[in-house]
Amino acid sequence: MEANSDVIIIGGGLAGLTSAIHLSKSGLKVILIEKNEFPKHKVCGEYISNEVLPYFESLGLKISDLKPSNIDKLEFSNTNGKVISNKLPLGGFGISRYFLDNYLFEKAKEKGCQIIQDSVIDIQFIENQFHISTSNNLKFKSKIAIGAFGKRSNIDQKLNRNFIQKKSPWLAVKAHYSGIFEDNLVGLHNFEGGYCGVSKVEKDIINICYLVDYESFKNHKNIEEFQSEVIYKNPNLKSIFENSTLLFDKPLTISQICFEKKATVENHILMIGDTAGLIHPLCGNGMAMAIHSAKIASELIIDFLNNTINSRKELEDKYIQQWNTNFKSRLAMGRILSKIVQKEKLASVLMQLLVIFPFILSIIIRKTHGKPIILKS
Ligand SMILES: Cc1cc2nc3c(=O)[nH]c(=O)nc-3n(C[C@H](O)[C@H](O)[C@H](O)COP(=O)(O)OP(=O)(O)OC[C@H]3O[C@@H](n4cnc5c(N)ncnc54)[C@H](O)[C@@H]3O)c2cc1C
Image (cartoon, rainbow, N blue to C red; front, side, top):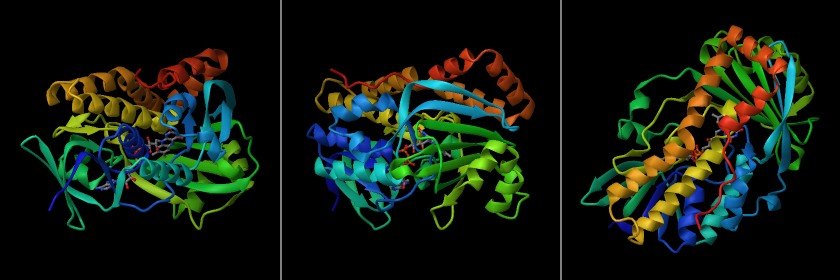
């Protein structure tokens, strides 16, 4: 027997959960399938741009209830520790994914979304319906399927998506710490082969998360050795790490992080969040983009199911067009930035330019961030 719904969402990260709340709130029958249980820590810088706040409020989500840190200052340093800083025009907040994803999970259930803990293993599109199977042998069918399964998933393999064949050199390490760090600051500190983001989340906790090229990492025995031999060469990072106490048993790691272009719609599945494309974390905007893409897809799906959009083709074309308008140039800017910080000489030229012309940093922030996200009236 196949359980029937209007929409099935595969993956319950920020993008999937936001869409689940939006669509359930508008009265649709929504099933979300997430393979992991809640709450769970995730590898992420945990700084979110304030651009999501108006949209969250319109969905009845009150981020201030979670008591996040409020962040309005960016500090950037090169491998030698030379620092420049800038006000963040729109600002943002710091909240752990452990806390935020769980909050959205509870809100999605409250709005009537059915959430199932299972792993999707197959999606077929037959006669205008999606047929979805899970590893626990559950079967579902729906008119619409949303792909919200993140950076890299078994479903990418199943769909034979282009990027999945390519190896990616990037890995990331993240942990929470106690210590002293400015409440309103997000620090981005360059080191050989990568960069490290530092900012506060709720409860005075410091989140430290770094992205590193495997080539730089592989010659070291373990994370501790890598940190003291490579990361500590940046004096800012040395001071931050040496004055902080690890709150996790050990840091979390992920590998094969890929910034390649991805298709926005594949096999008629509307892809949202990282499933549609991951911006370089240096831009600190992936979560806002995930939430924004959930909004765009949800609004169009509501129009499609109300027959305001006449065909599936029109739905898909409109989604691709709106996705490109909002995110294509931001992703391109992210790719350029990541190339620059990877090359030490280029990074040092950029740093010198930023010191002489600090307004360039404001331009970069503007080019990688969006405007406040507002619900369609
Ligand atoms: C190192 C690093 C630092 C970052 N720092 C920041 C930052 O400071 N600020 C910012 O805005 N962005 C940051 N980002 C980006 C941000 O983390 C992502 O853009 C965001 O998590 C995207 O959310 P999502 O919902 O698309 O994916 P995810 O949060 O990854 O959710 C995908 C979900 O799908 C589930 N799933 C996968 N496959 C299946 C399956 N087959 N069946 C069921 N469930 C499945 C997974 O378990 C997961 O829960 C960072 C990214 C990295 C890598």
